[in-house]
Image 1 (cartoon, helix red, strand yellow):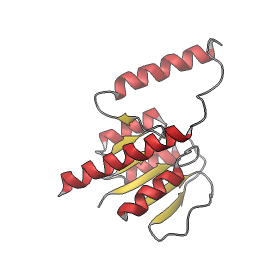
Image 2 (cartoon, rainbow, N blue to C red):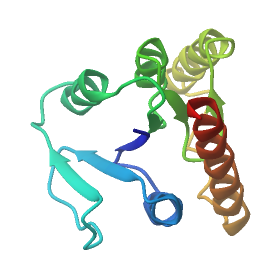
Image 3 (cartoon, helix red, strand yellow):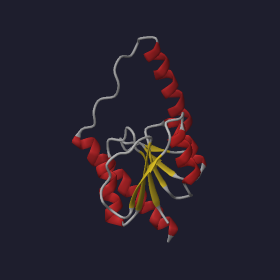
Image 4 (tube, helix red, strand yellow):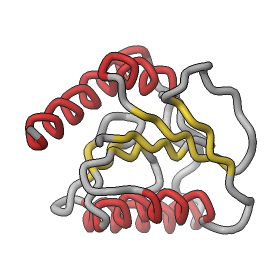
Length: 151
């Protein structure tokens, strides 16, 4: 059954994910390195993992199944989840695919080098309401496409 996993420590769209999951009666697992508040809902589970390097990522990869959805901004994790058969969306609604993950990783590495050299300062801009609406729409599309595929 379709399940949503959230790489939660820095995920700004958790309320939007809960909204879509509730609409479709989907299970959600929030994976984090420390306790965080989640809605009182029997379909939402908080999975707290240790603080070790990539522990949350490893837990997600070990627990996803084909046709699950993973929400993450972590590009290497996105690649690992794609290999496991999951659909992957960033918190901005970008859909990671086998076709674009290589280019996305290369761009990430280039930007990391530029930040390290002081060429780029600061991080991404905060999400706007429009960004959140676009994320909601894209998540809805992914859920519907998986459900059609499973029918």
